[in-house]
Image (cartoon, rainbow over all chains, first blue to last red):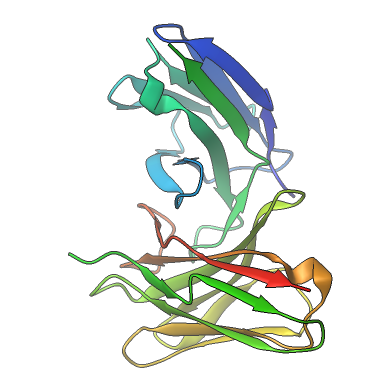
Amino acid sequence: QQPVQSPQAVILREGEDAVINCSSSKALYSVHWYRQKHGEAPVFLMILLKGGEQKGHDKISASFNEKKQQSSLYLTASQLSYSGTYFCGTPNNNAGNMLTFGGGTRLMVKP
Amino acid sequence: KAGVTQTPRYLIKTRGQQVTLSCSPISGHRSVSWYQQTPGQGLQFLFEYFSETQRNKGNFPGRFSGRQFSNSRSEMNVSTLELGDSALYLCASKQRERNTGELFFGEGSRLTVL
């Protein structure tokens, strides 16, 4: 089952913050976050493993609540370079590299 | 270190034809996954290979097939093309089999079916 991302799209001004949510109807082993800029390949941001550990990547951080089967991606003081589509991906099991991706959140940062 | 290379980058086919797409993973990576990306369905998993063995398969018809060679290069084939097969086909490689760590995506092969 595909994880559900919200919002579907968001427009920010440079310097503003945003939160992207990813929720699943099934138990999660981990949550993977990727960003894809227009016309480019998806690029890995981070993986959240069981344990609610919060990870960071520059001014982008994320949390994982395995009980609620949810993950949130936090973009702080957004930059123009943050524009793109953000995908969360969840594995079907703890083996192999198959990910089921959410529908994506389109983020546009304006000057 | 060279990234994931996919060929061809763009191709146009007509309904009923078949197509073969190629993916060269990052050197040393033994896992190769394929994804289909469309505006309507998003990123959907096709299949994954590790050491020439198919490990996982997504929910696609049998017209979609793939294989991996001993040098980890992979190909996917779509037979009897349909209009709905028009998509960006992305290949991703990874060093290990287990589901931790990042997938490295290629820039994709954009297939248009007329």
